[in-house]
Amino acid sequence: MKVRNAGKRHTLLIYKRTMNRLWGATMLLGLMLLIVWGAIRIQNITVFETEHTIWLLAGAAVALAFGLFAFFARNMAYVQPRRDHLRLVTPFLRLNIAYSRIRSSHPSNFHQLFPASKASWATKKFLEPFYGKTVVVVDLMDYPINPTFLHLFLPAQMFSRQSKGFVLVVPDWMEFSTELESFRGNWMQARKRGPKKPISPWIR
Image (tube, rainbow, N blue to C red; front, side):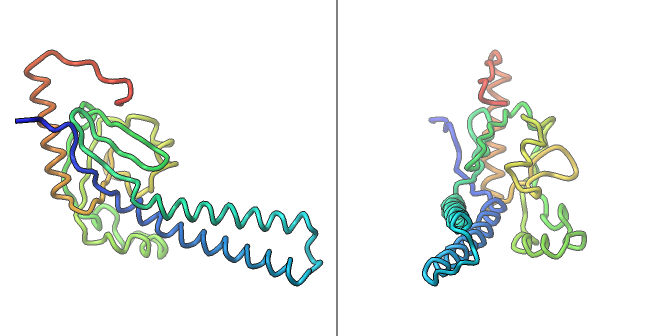
């Protein structure tokens, strides 16, 4: 039987929700700035100097460009079990986590990890779709790179508060968990049967 090199790509739902909120807000801001710029130009309003209206147009262009990027980036973040590592990908981050770093993985309830009673109103509104969901917590012996750097690219709710590791909210937690344990189990069996292979420098 042929051994698969990779499992399914499972969308990271918290990252997707972040992009969903960002693209709408930035597109609205860009359109508002564009309308203000157009009104000033058409009505020939002299309250703003010419160089200031250029900044309005530039701000509108940046906001609209980021909004379009966020719209198309919504489904670009995923997690994927592979033959010898777990791959976590976002538009700005590509992280290959060696199975040797993973202590364990287990299902948990999202609301137990991030209680609504302890969240601010804004955070609670953001996390509302995930309360009641089952997630997969991947406990690590250590992060592959500095967690401060990781926090720049990943939402805070993707980090476990109880241990070092990631909280992964995916469309089908059971399918992802089964795949992860299957690939990790095969990797562990292969390590026991033969000499240890050097880990690729791209896998941390």
